[in-house]
Length: 295
Ligand SMILES: C[C@](O)(C(=O)O)[C@H](CC(=O)O)C(=O)O
Ligand SMILES: [Mg+2]
Image (cartoon, rainbow, N blue to C red; front, side):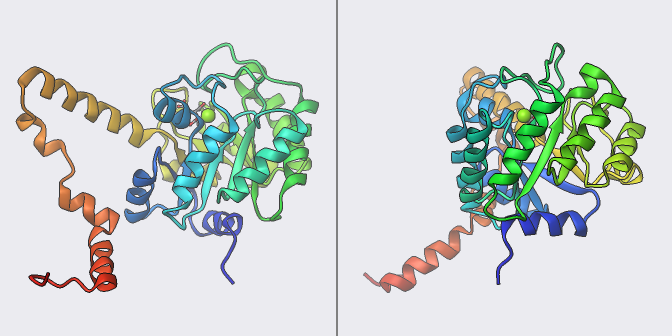
């Protein structure tokens, strides 16, 4: 029997340490990431807000906004998809609904964080977090709502920046007791802190290797030595795509031609290869009996 998405994520974490999880802001990006060998994908909350809606990552987008992006990815890939569910999109019953909708949309797991609903990016100042009791309630509600017991509930804590390492670790442990399968300590600055989390919680720990934030760009080797289970690159490709797009827009506008930036572009045949375009065409020909040169 085909493994569930949750099982596939758990197996991937076992198979690759740390499991590199690639952020994909759309279905086509997911296909490229899969075809270069990633074994897991990520739907970033910031990605949904910034790329799909042109909004800042400040808790403005909804469950439906996010679920739609998840559906698009799960339609084109068998890779397990970890989803950023921000603060869970509400209180207990809404969190339960978040879990159910994400499962149905094909997600393998979600992370829920302990920031207040008016959340911020984890690498920005002035974050505020809910009490430990409220956070463990979120996790309990999420774990209880799963249809598939293998669906991954990951607890993200933003407590390190707010309350320091000891309280953050205590929170992470409390989340595991409440049913969290994995832990995402946000905005970690030192390898030894990852190690401390990993040793304390004894479940896979995720390192968010997002650029231009508080976490140094640790290598997978460094992360492995600190006992990290998953290495996340939430927006790396999006940042590069955005820079490339800007360059191209400017060149066309300023130079009246795209000639100077053509070698920055993916070619039509490269695009078609990732999309399996020719397979579609062949299927069409087979279905409708169209042969070359025959009307
Ligand atoms: C991981 C994250 O939650 C995301 O939404 O992708 C962001 C990433 C970022 O803003 O760089 C976060 O770390 O808060
Ligand atoms: Mg986020």
